Image (tube, rainbow, N blue to C red; front, side, top):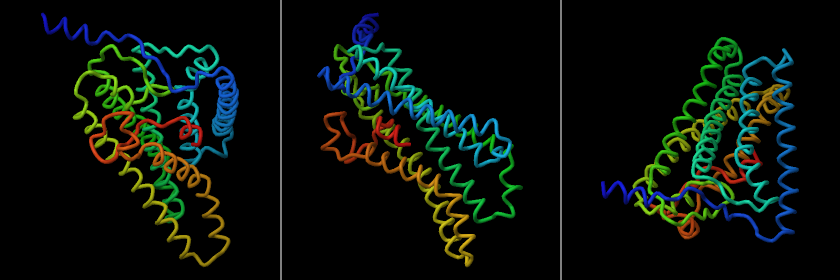
Length: 294
């Protein structure tokens, strides 16, 4: 009974304070206008894609089916964090409840993880289209595409459930200031009064294995596509293959480029964010720059 009461007292934090934004009023107003503009442009662009894919029967094929899923993810991803951030900038209300922080972290990791897996699936789709064009209609049937899409959302959900449970089953003491503008794993872990080393190691291992696996699959698909294009003698065929893959490859480069810059940092840099279990740490989930870039 005594241990139970001590545990209850240690877990007394009911609200977190997001302190990753400027306190200067003129800077907050400038950031509010900037991020609101980018957010609205992002919403408009992705909603347009969804409407086009769903209403135009000519776009009812695997490539645009996956593109619709990607557009939906790019709508959800900033929506999870940006409205709260805009409210903090405009009203200077930086508080977020314990449950609100939990759900924000859960949904953000779910969406980001799903997008990582979906990009790998889309790379495989382009590989089949370029390297095995005659077999493409038989391989990439809509039933298989639906299963692959559902699989990415399911794996993203399980990945997020694991990460969130590892973080929010810890004990939290009096400190509740999150050094970020949204609930992120490293700063939240840093507030815990429990030992977090083993959980950080599990988070690093899971994120590393899943992230590396999907990256290798995506990279291998595009290497095969590149070799197939170089082996083609027809300039028209090369142009068609490049145009087929260029937009998706651009998204992949932006996504992984910003992800590597944001997630992977030397221990000297991330030491103020959380206690790193090794020489490097994968920061998960994405920052605003990475979200908006993709």
